[in-house]
Length: 327
Image 1 (cartoon, rainbow, N blue to C red):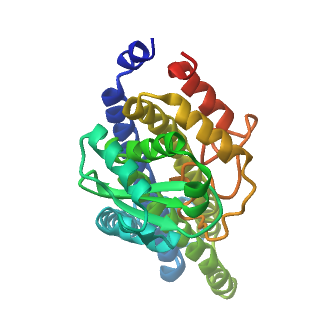
Image 2 (cartoon, rainbow, N blue to C red):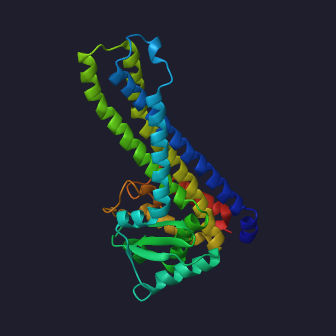
Image 3 (cartoon, rainbow, N blue to C red):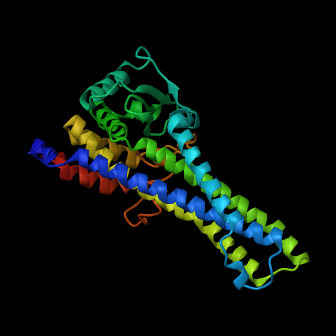
C-alpha cells in the first residue's frame, strides 16, 4: 500500500512547479525594488529641482525615477547572483556550522551517504552546529555542490531511523532545487528592507528642506506615497518569503518519504522536535526559514499562513501519515 501511494505522487512535477512559483516570486520582489527605486528618484527630483507648486505638474515621467528603478532592479538582480554563487558559504557562516569528518561522526556520514545514493546525487558535505537544540538545515547552489547540517542535540536525540527521515527531508531541499531560490528571496527581502529604511530616514532631511523652500502639494503627495510604499514593501516581501518557505517544507517532507520509503521515521522525528524545549541560541532570523523547524517558535494551526515560516508540525505529521505512515 505504501509504495502504491508513493507512485501516485508526481514528485518531479511538484519540484518543477515549486521552482516556477519561486522564480515568479523573485521576479515580483525585483519589481517591488524597481517601484521603490522609481519613487525614491521621483521624490528626489521633486525636491532638488523645486518643481512648481501644483499637483498636476507632479504627474510626469520622471527621468530620475526611471534611473532609480533601473538602478535598484539591476542591483537586486546582481545581489541575487551573489546569493546564488556564495549563498551556501554565507549560510554556513551565519549558522556557525563546523564541517565534520567520517571519523568524527561515522553514523551521520553513513546516513547522509545512504540518502544521497537514494537521491542519485553527490554526497553533500556534512556539518554540525554545537547546540543542544533539535534542528537541521540544507544549503547549496546545486545538488552537485551542497551541504547538510544538523545540531548536536538532534544527533544525540534521534535514533537511526528518525535521523534518516530528517536527512531525507534536507536532501529533499537539495534534489528539488529550491534552496537556491529560498536563499535569493531572503537576500532580496533584506535588500528591500535596507532600501526602505534608507528611504524613510531620508524623509527627515527632505522634510526640513521643503519646510524652508517653496514646497508644494504635488511634492508632498509623492513623498506620502514614498512613505507608504517604503513602509509596506519590506512587510510584503517578508510575507512572500514566508509563503515560499511553507510550500518548500511540505515538498521536502514528501521527498523524504520517497527517499526513505518509511514515513514513520520522519513522523516520530517531527514529534520529538515538537516537544523539544531547548532554545536555539545561535539561530539567525536571516536563516530561520532554512531549518526543518523554525528555531524561534513552533507555529500552531491558527497561525496565519502568510506570517509563518513553516507549516504547523501537526499538519505536516498528518500529511505524512496520509502518504502511508500508518500503513
